[in-house]
Image: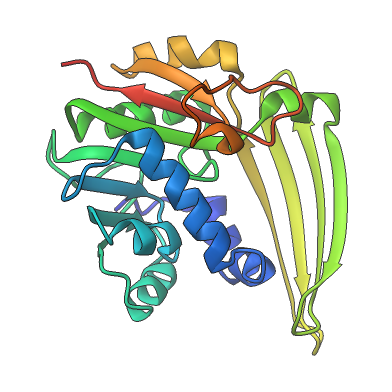
Length: 252
């Protein structure tokens, strides 16, 4: 695992998980896992790598039919994943230096932009690393927010109360020129304890995905969105689409 400090170590801890836990319902996890399964065309018993698996909510669902390995940098998240009884294997590691042999997996996926938290050169290295551990013909799914939609409304703010009485505030700005969304989040507990952090996530435009895939040694199969994932005929993301999913394949 890479030992270099990164903003994700503070942001993707209690600050992130506690502020969204009530939104990440079992129903949502099942719907997202179904989209992953359909797009990757997972067959029973295939080996799947969950890149930056967090507390294992997708791995838990997918492991019912596939052999899932979840990788995350956070020991706390992995302990939670293991403690909730997910029938998957969990490995502590960094997406910048995957601790797996070449061609170890039939498929892999990254959900919620967790593969692209770095500069462009490092993001491409992460994508190349994911390609390395796929077998020839293996598929990789990468999900992130829709930059076409963010470009129309680059500034956003929100405040909401959590079931335990905590308050979450968020301010975000999408830099269209850089393709980077910068989000500052604050969580204030009922007793006054305060957690705060800032995330910077890179969202690639649809036109960027073909060249990005080729440089990583992959082929872009299609671009789509979560609402279209289960359909036979899928559309590319437009400005009104909620998200972007890139489906990639390692050439045989």
